[in-house]
Image 1 (cartoon, rainbow, N blue to C red):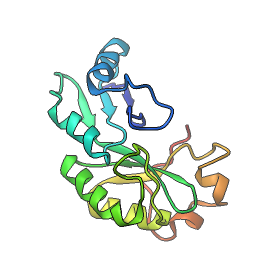
Image 2: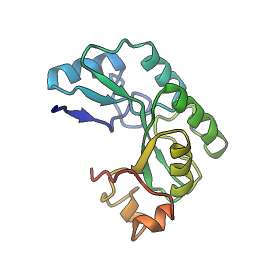
Image 3: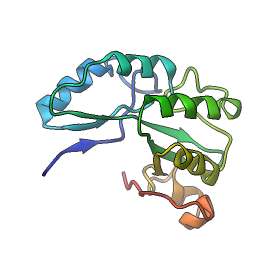
Length: 161
């Protein structure tokens, strides 16, 4: 089976994103472009999560709850979660470590990469560095190796972006 996917998008709640980044238009764009698997992006944001929970999933489409967070060393981490309940639980767990989790689609959390990925794994999700080779807010901008960022906690992927 061949499928086209985009698992790293952002919502209208992320800085520098269009106010038109809403579930309906996103799904319409997916149909036009032949994308059958789409990440929600920004699923830790409570209002955004509510929008997706209320949006019917079109036949032939798969919706994956996803988000990106910035850790304590400015590394961005892409997170894929099994369901909306896990997203709500992760948001609650991150809350004491984030001043902007309720208002920013891409929140900053004052946790190490290892702590972030460990919690995601505990919830049955997958995680890894986002856009690993960009010259800022990336794994290789802040670290010389995967182990330097994540320690013994294994990552599930490395997004090149």
